[in-house]
Length: 195
Image 1 (tube, one colour):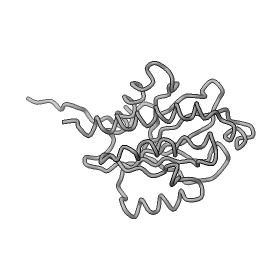
Image 2 (spheres, rainbow, N blue to C red):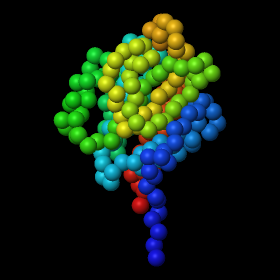
Image 3 (cartoon, rainbow, N blue to C red):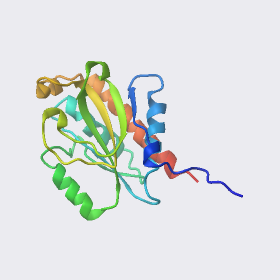
């Protein structure tokens, strides 16, 4: 009798993960959670990472920073949309979604975005099943996107959100971007070599 090497998780088994980006166990916890969520993909399903944000705002450049780092890998394991050079933001998000649905309608989407939260959560990275709702922190109505999403809480929400995003520390955003890019790259690379 043989047993499968890996049991594909059900939706109920993919628990969200939230950890401070600079915690000692941050990368291992996020990679484990990301791999759990990625196991929801169908066999041989392509993967697209959509990194949302703009390079015109320090707090909102988290997504494009992640996208730029991932695009430099030139990986065959996934496609990247949204970089510092070609950001995916409020003005072109729907166009990006439409183009992706036309070219690869069944791709598994990992959405990456910055968000605002409570002061105690600033610096935390979250891995969650289902779509992200871009622009929610600044009261924009944008289409939800993603089979799973990874968000970084870059600053405090609830008051003068645009000003807060503009005055977010770049050091924090870059540190979080490094952790998120590592998480995605290592998770997808490891799963692509699973027997």
